[in-house]
Image (cartoon, rainbow, N blue to C red; front, side, top):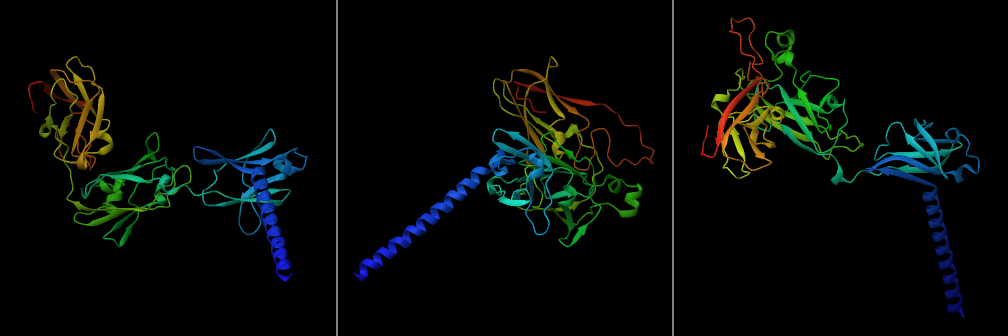
Length: 374
């Protein structure tokens, strides 16, 4: 008898626990049905709030519903738009929700739900793919640095996330030109960062007062903070550090006469390759070179920049044919110090220098079909 009573008592206790858990799960399910996040392109764009929470009075929902950042003290309402869609009130914030932060939904100043915006999967976090120039030794009068990302990044904030250190000790100030708007490509995945030209160009007041940003023979580290976010609010996957050493100043224009062109075989789509003998500007290499046939028609294809930006290869869309071709080079093409094909960046205007030619394009002939190498 004793064991029977004990068994009955255990069954009753178990049933009570089971029904309590079931009720809790039903409540959670109901809550998630009444308030849910709206997603688009892996980003939270708004919150859907069931009209049932307004208890029949759904006039002017913006006066009764508040969405705010969850924090201690008096909540501050987020700015945004409210609209009615069927049995839902849709809130779309003016400033996007930030992954990792918690938000509260209030109805008539009472919290009805707390929501945490999930952090993006680490595999989906933006990555700094490449820093150009890629080589570890660069001239002390380096003019530009390019940062290539895997995703669209927030603009107008780079000055907060880029630092230059000398000998791993001194953080240098006033090194980069704070341009607004910043120089992003169209899809906002590549940023052009200028070292201050006024400090690089000798004879100008910034150069005389502060000196050049970089000095020959010194070791530097370019540091990119992982606090930099993409347009969806996700931070860089990790911080990045590029170490390099500076060599002597480069004050000479690139000389196309010393370049080597390796012609492809006819009736193939083999690459046309050009060796520059020195490193050139990565971005300009992708836009300043063209291949033209003997009729003056541009040959369509894809350019690829090679190791340390010292060479490029061109793959045509169609098969090469026998004949004469030209490599046309826009003279705006520069080396790492900003010297273009017409003139050095730091030309001494006080010197009695002969006026340099200002041609826009230089043409270099090559042939396909006779194993011709320029």
